[in-house]
Length: 160
Image (cartoon, rainbow, N blue to C red; front, side):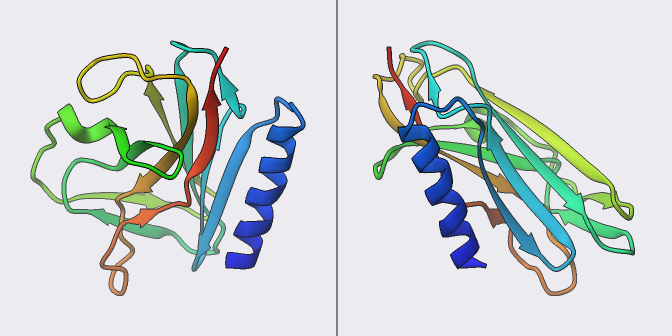
């Protein structure tokens, strides 16, 4: 699976270097579930809203039931390319401290769209440059999945 992810990221990076405006995506399969994170393109203008779509799809023959330790279902981390985190979606939010559930029927998918306005933790505009967006799905598949799933980071550029 790691080879497939590396291959997918290599193809996406090559398309980005060639100036293609195709989506940037990464996916991960675990049991019968496909997790996919997508950016609409590899480059954004300064100040432009960046939207990441996180899709969770049940490709199995039976329903899958996720358990969440709180009302939060996902997160998004934005970092400088190879550097420190500059923003996290959940950082200024409060979530009900109650266990929640999500069941996906056979073939069903759920989609979360997470937006970033290119501001850092302090509210200032980030500088142009290379960044990474990392989607995190917080649902767990009991009984043997005691963790959330952080997908590999998606590279993108902010520039003129």
